[in-house]
Length: 271
Image (cartoon, rainbow, N blue to C red; front, side):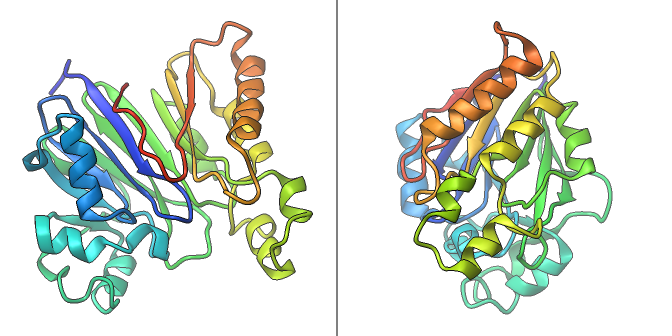
């Protein structure tokens, strides 16, 4: 698959539901998380000229509702291999969203190393801190691209940072503005869950700090994901990340910066 264009899109990104597609033009592709319905994924991909028969796998980051709500339907309608950690697969075997359909679809990531999930697509799952059963990010080798995917994490770990420093594209959470969170209408317990202890979500400031740390000349794309609808705005997240890129790469930063809307699909971006 070397030399083939690689394309990426998000269906939705946030507590309303999470799901994305990455794949080769005229080749296999995979889904990341299953918080978006089969009907919507089918419609959005067909509208963009993606053949549904090219879908080869689903990767799952963790077991929160907004990431697995429709996972059973993907198994039922597409019979796609579902790649997750062994601990997550044990959860899915009994979870009411998945237990009736996932049996023959389960595939386990190795404890360390890479798994070929589709022809030309290899994935390394690495742990990230989040208050779910067994949350992971993904390093994805697809053609000539090296994509690092990290959403729903309380902090960027050393392993995640090391992988991002070798990536051509990074998808990273920029969930909340600290001032909006602390002065908003969430309960105190929820504010603490999101913003403290390193097991919740990544703030705009923490995201920007990570971008400054992992930026390198080969990084062509950064996508911000999982923006809060209550404690953030796209303009605030983009402004913070843009400033980080200017500091890291200079005023003519060659890296493209985009964000995934909460409830709207993106175009099919070429990486």
